[in-house]
Image 1: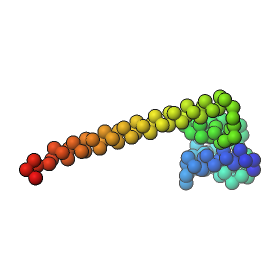
Image 2 (image 1 turned 180 degrees about the vertical axis):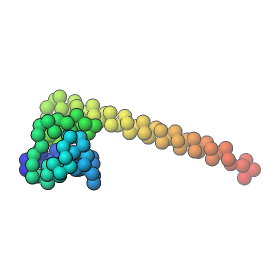
Image 3 (image 1 turned 90 degrees about the vertical axis):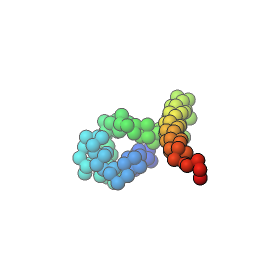
Image 4 (image 1 turned 30 degrees about the vertical axis):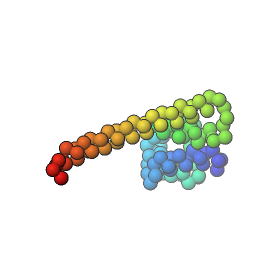
Length: 117
């Protein structure tokens, strides 16, 4: 099997652990059996099927596998940088929400403390 194709299918296994055949089939509108054949390396998906995966919510991961880590094209460096920036923004927002939750809990505990203790 071609390395890029194997890397491409490994994305499906990582984003849908335990359910890759079913999710792959649903995203590409093929039977689960066909998806199992792809994952087993018995058959290769069509460009139409690969395009459906590139257009899915995990499209960036599939595109990264297709392009490979060794791509030095300037446009791809910008795409990866933008994706990393967006991911960091999502993580920061999640951390800020958690920090706010902790502050609320701390304030609730502080209000429960008896000043005579």
